[in-house]
Length: 446
Image (cartoon, rainbow, N blue to C red; front, top):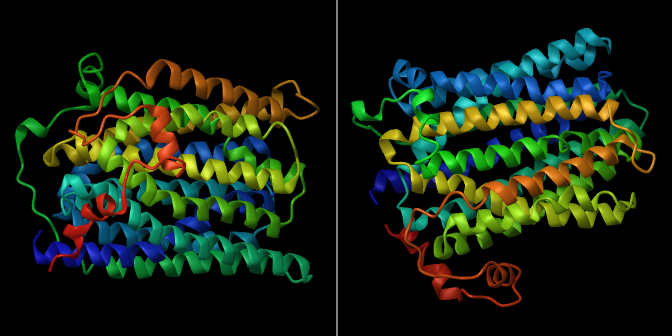
């Protein structure tokens, strides 16, 4: 590992802090902003679905955008600055009268924000993967995710306390939302500055790396990677059928305060902070596919558990479970791509992966918004009907697709799913401290 790459990896950790605060605000307080502006469940569905659809389609032009910028790093610097500029009008949307016009502007701005963000994410993942050896990716992304998660805690906690203060003190709630999204804008500007300090990577062009989206899809029968992409997309579709409406359910049907909402979101984030390095260490030893198989089996329990109680403390326990399981699934989904795709094809394959996954999110969230207003109530709530349906469809996705793709990297251990679960939970560890440390020793070399 060369010194410039060591420096870039260190800067990447620093850049991840303001970026994580910005994303925490956008991911956790965008729906509350929509509700404040008067959005219905169907409009909340559009707020989630429509930006994801267009931000997926724009990925077809990711390679062209990088070529126009001259390099991956130049594109990232330009795109992060553009994203910060897009956030400025979002900051002042609370000043508009609530209603359809304000919601339309919000959807438009967030669509542009997500389009830019999806391009940033794809290109950043491709760039950072060139800095890392395969045997260290799980640990690096696990520990980097820990740092980012701590920063996310600041974003979630700060945003919740800010909104709670303005809500309870009788002050204008508008000002609370304005200050919250101004802070997100400043954080994106800081992350853009730090990213400009990273080292660029030159990737030689190979014509064999040029293949269309249709050519990619047509290889579904023989391509292990395409099967993996469809598996993740199916989980995204069935999850987003219900997940955007947990927040609506909490704030509108259960009438939780912003403080209670913040606590639920915060604990989910904190659990991810604990879980990321645990999943990362295990992934380096047993493979990413193994962890994806077991986490996709456990994911359907999340909406199922929401059906049994409205108690605040019970729901906290459910979200702790959800945060732990989703940490493993999300981390290993990204790491599997790095293992399965050669560097020259990585940007293109990441684009196609995010395109299909984004389309799945669009379908799930759009359908969920419709069903949230038209499903027959279960135990007096249409949200319960939606959660039950999502449970069933998530389990079907796991049953039919989780076994269709295989691990591509040679792993150190063969282990049953039950033993893996016990090891991750700390009941019957299969990894000692020395084994975990060996995988990150390369990061400490000077």
